[in-house]
Length: 124
Length: 147
View 1 (cartoon, rainbow over the protein chains, first blue to last red):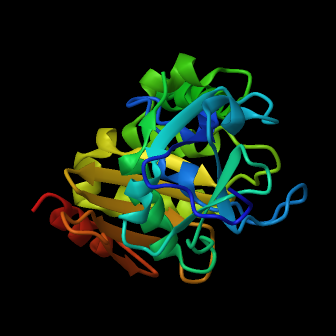
View 2 (view 1 turned 180 degrees about the vertical axis):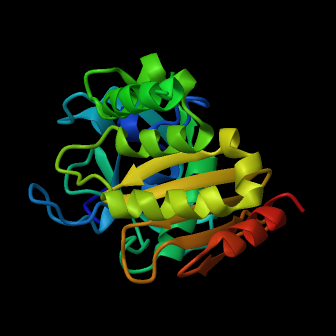
């Protein structure tokens, strides 16, 4: 596979989730774990969500983040929002794209985030 | 005659106000003594942020709290909500089966907003958003949540 190639439907992918994005009661990720980050002083705005092909790849380079959740690629594609799941330039990472920034379309951005939260399960 | 009740209150209240706002007192220590509304406000103010993430402004939190505190339906289910923050946005969500209602604000002109979300058995899910929301909008949305 090469950068930009679609990921097979049966592949499980992993997203790093910081403590602030986990509900303390249910221990599940919050909707906010699946929203695109706007531009900040330190980082540019995200145009897609980054996942790893393994939990270790998802956590790579993220200081202080230890939790991951997992989703099957086919379940993301079946959400019906025309999302794409493609390989990153780094073969251990995957980009999930097609969702708007919260600033641009709050309703759709939060709806897709809620859909993704429902199909995600926390890795032990 | 000196009114002791008033004078004691005058002495004690500023102390509690200071204690309430103090970051030296941990969230866990005084959290059980707060009302439901205050707990939501505190959870939004003290939410853990990611690197470089701006916290929600006092205005954003205040707008969300104002709508919730004036909604009769919301006041009955304060303990069931999930407060969260995202890059300056304050969000409070209630869930019931496949339906969700979120009140959110970043302090924009058309905030606060109420989002109604329904996960369908056949995707895609559906949503509706109400800008410049008030207590009535939230009451109606929460009524829909439990229909």
